[in-house]
Length: 92
Image (cartoon, rainbow, N blue to C red; front, top):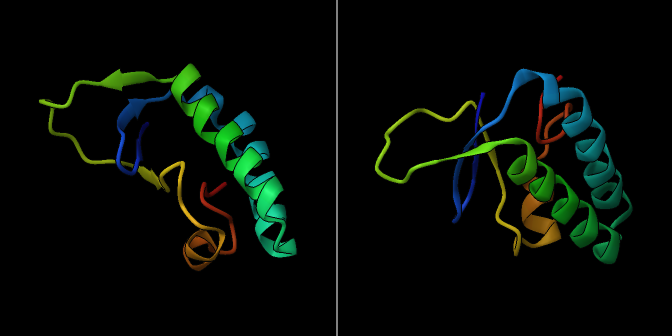
């Protein structure tokens, strides 16, 4: 699965990582729902770090469609709140 982190690039992440990524995504959702900016920054950082750690960076000169798009690490809580759906940032 190809996951894009806005402003950073794409990562090829194995499907087996989805369960762990969904757990981290739920923590981001909780922080957004409660309006806790400090927790939001930390949990978004955790999610993006997990994508980087579990994925392989796709070279910038390779053009491929992204299956998921995650916000940049410096995104604001209100901006991410607008992106969140019923299933968070990562469906499943």
